[in-house]
Length: 220
Image 1: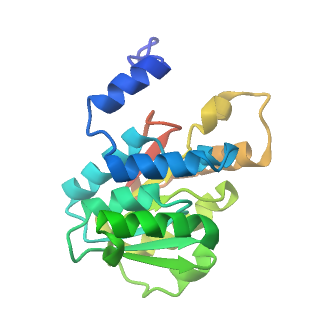
Image 2 (image 1 turned 60 degrees about the vertical axis):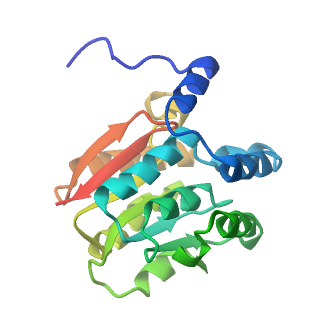
Image 3 (image 1 turned 90 degrees about the vertical axis):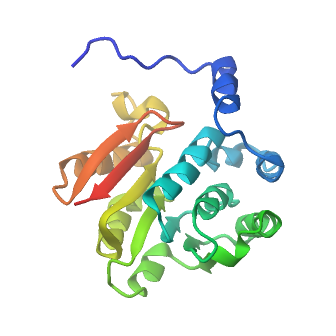
């Protein structure tokens, strides 16, 4: 293992360069970003634009037709996933907040993907338990309460086909995962999940330094 990582520090200027030299957010996505930013500090929950572009591309590469999202917030990640699905694809979104998800609904309609999205306002664990317990999904995205990450993974694995992928957000937790002084509940939960996922024989695991850390789990 190299002592010096090949990744570079992502400054604001370098981030802007990175976004504009990929597939940048379109007008609808930019408006959703701006509306979410107006909510204040809570806007940090929205995924980064380069992560959204990556998720759209990965959805297409996988040929995914059915996907599940746990934690929708204002709908940017759902918009990105839905755009990667075919016209008759399906994305089940699990969230508890109608005020925030209603922002997403408006932008999904404008983007022409609302017909693909089945938003379920209920505890995600209940929604997952009520689905047919068969491996009918190609892709899942976890971005919700950190204390339940392991529970969400356990609930999702029976629903994901062999070769399907589960994406997990915030796995670097702004660097706190390696800070010995950081022992708050969320940091401890992320560490437990990261250790659990890396050792789970049911999946292949890779952690990528995209935005706040994104883990890809491929079901064996």
